[in-house]
Figure 1: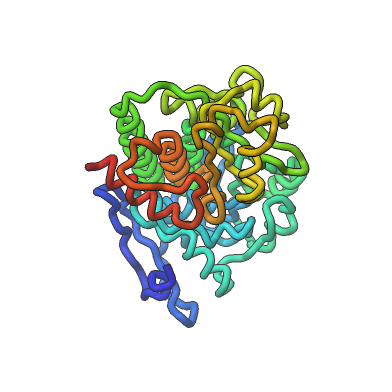
Figure 2 (figure 1 turned 90 degrees about the vertical axis):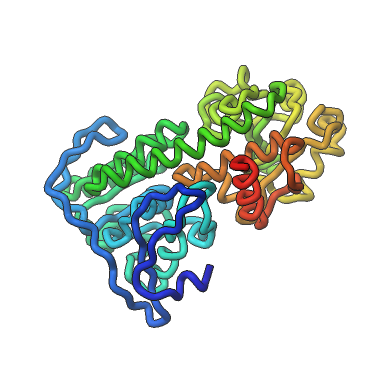
Length: 370
């Protein structure tokens, strides 16, 4: 990825398998300088945000984003030149440079270098965000994700005349599409947002179409977060994207569907046994050795998922990629499908997927397009 980041000036988006959003992006040279492609400034507009509130935006030339989710979507629209401040959460700017089926939009390397050369203000961690930290970026528009927002921060910013656009909770594909279109409208980039959503829908259609062709019987799937954690093992429920929505998208059943009506909650080993899953996926494993204990624990060792070697986990970079709720959700869907339909793949994967996940994504994309 470094060779891309040391390129000169403006690079056109690469088209992946004929699908790309058609914008361009810029990168910095060794000295941290480059011509930044400007995005035209729209006239004042009013948007209805994820709260259902009408927000009037006079200018979007300096945008502060209070979550990496929003930052990635802004980059996906090709609006890098508008970013004045971003949060720096969990080192997410060292992740992928590939989203299955989409063109290269320059994220996250372009943000990492912008922070390094101080072209963009680092406003700190999203969980600690305050009006004071946002103001360090001198924004004329603030865009927030659907979670971890402080009413006090929002009220303070709005009281100073700075418009705040809040996205919806990203617990469904529909809400992710809504957020992309909302951000596009706020930035005066409706066409770019519509194109990105259309391309995402095309990729989702290819994945679901491939799954349908397999004719595989329905499986009971338990998606966990942190099996064996000292804080408890969480199970993904009906309202969490990694739970029922993603599982049912591919004609399977959430093993916790009747017991976890919300997003997620702590589940005991006994509750996992009662759920009796055919497949277990740990989306936030504590470690390979810890996840391995599900196979030897006296309570869980006889589960169908254990007996048939259908325990899966995402580690290292893949673990961060799996839970992203932007255009990168396409990678999450593909990883999920590779786990669940492992026996239908024409290449081998490890049950515990790590930094090699990008190679697997490319192989999977080739297979479903063959």
